[in-house]
Length: 124
Ligand SMILES: [Zn+2]
Ligand SMILES: [Zn+2]
Image (cartoon, rainbow, N blue to C red):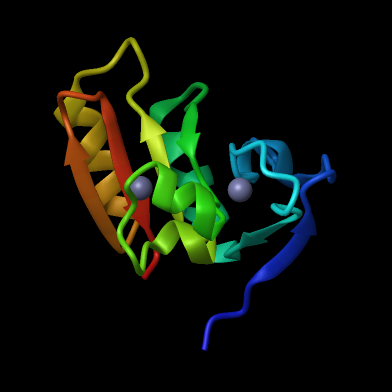
């Protein structure tokens, strides 16, 4: 059983030195989407990736509510629904597979989306 942290979507709090709840919230505009689930080991892995990259790492998608997950065509049991997944955009000054290797090192599970320039990372 995973221990998840709950935040309100209106929260703007630091989760770690380089990650805030604002970056973790679901990107939808649905009024019923009011909370965010955060899995602390995912936050820790993000910090490790960021440290190794040596600069900012932009998050395309973190937590998703059910409605938003369906809207973006996410998997039915997507790790984004549980707040354990992050889609990390490749930093501009780095090769795609160089970045992918760093993600693989620190997350339990990764998928490379080379054409879309991001890596799905999760701690399933
Ligand atoms: Zn949402
Ligand atoms: Zn993803």
